[in-house]
Image (tube, rainbow, N blue to C red; front, top):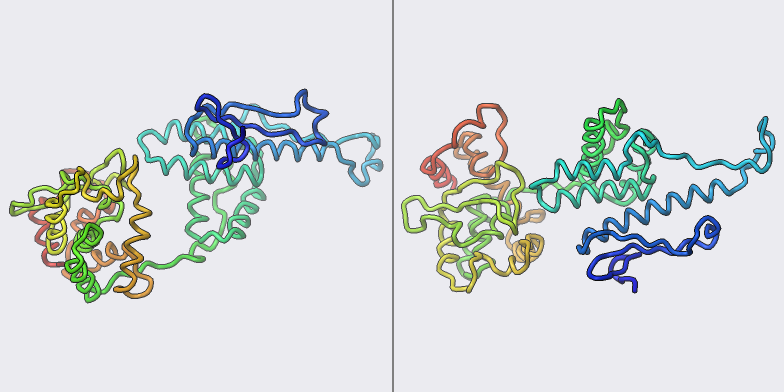
Length: 388
């Protein structure tokens, strides 16, 4: 029986299978009226992506078959032809990998140790293109395909940053495959213009007066959601970094240098390599950390409500916290605005940019920045106390 949540699939012995009935007008080309293929996965997420790609490939192939069967106006006037001459569909170049082949190689080589979102985003971008233009050999994609893809993304209402992200993944997949197979082919998706600022909302920093008001409300309510807000307000952490913390990540709370350790966990990855760091706890962040440590919630997690499954539900945290926060901050400010505010607060006390980068987990340019272990905690604490 076909599954309802994932079109064109059914489950047998725990594994997903793709199933699609052959259209009536094309059954003469098939020995059986239904196509069934194992997807070799028990994961609903992977099955959904693979089934979507497989369906798009079939639709593209069936469109070519229908085109080959149709009559072309004026074909009888072509020299050396007959009215029965048909247009054969273009066959893919067997010496050049297809986009799906390129995606498989890219994920196999570049996806090791990367978060699930990396794979999903690459598959989504390639799936978009396959659904629009078909799964062609890399040599068969043209500039017209790239422009059509751009126009399709714009028509869907994607923001400029989302369009940039889709093109970035496509270019990365194709460029990697061209390099791996040593193919002298120009990537037609490079240099395609689009308005990068279209629909993009600029995140605003939260004014210091509003931050103080929010922190005061956090003290008054004094629950786990407000602890997370207070923690982020005086550390500049990313929301996912804070939501995925263990209690044991709160270090030295009874010492002169209390800090929070931001490290990779199986349930919550880090955005970049430089995101792994320790941040001194000062001001309201220290208050929140102590409240988290003292809380008897029967869990090793600092915020169990956002870690009840195998992955930290940062999106749920964002929705809930932003809903509360909007009553205390200017329009356009969100939880992520605390991160922008921390950057401005450190600028206001003339904190050196490389120290600011270390506190916030931002990447610092320059070869020399990769040497050594960074600034000691006492130095970071000094500047955070000035900002707080």
